[in-house]
Picture (cartoon, rainbow, N blue to C red):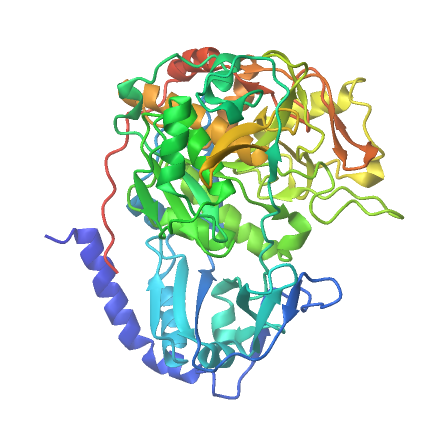
Length: 593
């Protein structure tokens, strides 16, 4: 039997659709009416600075997919954030009282007439399919190029990448707009003006200088970081507990043709004594070896072998589409590791970042932990710091206050022991987002430390959110041993750090779930309340490539080079179980559209 709440929503949608036919007909794109440009802060494609080259106009019949973010009323967005804080803070009585998908939908309360009007508009413009997200705040619109150009009063071109001429995408070559009657109900149309930043190649085929014993049977792992090295340094139990995997789940996100081969995972698993098995794939896979994907899989499983793993794949690096994707999964994995990112400046639209942050908030209130690699270009990001006028370039989403950012370290010496900052590890202060409450004291303490020796104020934003939050090995001095394309090699980057920390927190979730507690959800309030559960990194600096004067110093306590340091599983397991939290939430209820 259909739930009453779903029946009412379905009936309301049917009535509103019929009532809005006249209204929407009046706002059809062919009529002469007032139009409103969206994302006005996004400059037009500039061939002089862009990595993407504009090509020919595509066939008018060529299909494309757009993500339309509907406006969420300000009071509802504020309530979402208040709930996010309450269920994420261990000091809150509501800690761990996560919401179901239905409850998030009810909280957002996007009016059905708003959903229906925008959906009907695109249908009238020729869209073949318009699918509202379960939370009713986004629409996935499938339509032809011609229909998109008409509906959005823009021009679509084919673009190819300078370094990958075989890679083609469809984007608007000028601004886009909607009729004023609808523009007030739409925040933005995702991935229409945003150009994806291709993942910079990982540092591969690196040799290791570690003097520890090689616990893997593969000779190619000698001197490299292996699962056994991480287990020793981060105080992991010698064996996985079956209880840690019961009812538990975790995921890695892959983009841009990063697939995996089961044969590589099997080879790594046998050599390094890891259950490197993928339990579920969302978005498809091809039997092709991607170093990034196989690194993520092999090392999140090295940390949490008994926890079922999902790989969420998207062809483009569309952060918004990925966030909408995981928010739409009925029973999503509890922990997500993402090793991709971009500079804040390269997201080109404040509204785009705002919309992504809303998706992170929705994930957090449902008990989902999201971890992002902090980047591998130090404080300068992918754009560089500039020469005549220096300005640090913070990373996004790493600098978002609603996710956990993971930086990278090296061993200080050649043996397993104290760590130091990796100079390439991303970190700093956001130019867009203010300092969140959970880190205000930590950031203030860093700035007042004489050991910080802060860089000139003109180079960075003194009022921005600081990142990373934590770190793990990932530097070029301590490359990881992975199996890819049938052989073993050393790779480095915070792309290794993020799945390691994510796997550790997935195991910690397992402890809580086995005790009848809720998963941890958004991690940062817990992390900042328990700094003693991490191994502080107090030396080194995340620099600016060949410019050593740039960057932030690691000091005692939190710093924008390594956060609070690296995990200590034994200490974390103790404080995680001391956090009260609420009983594990029941399964969500499907929403019928």
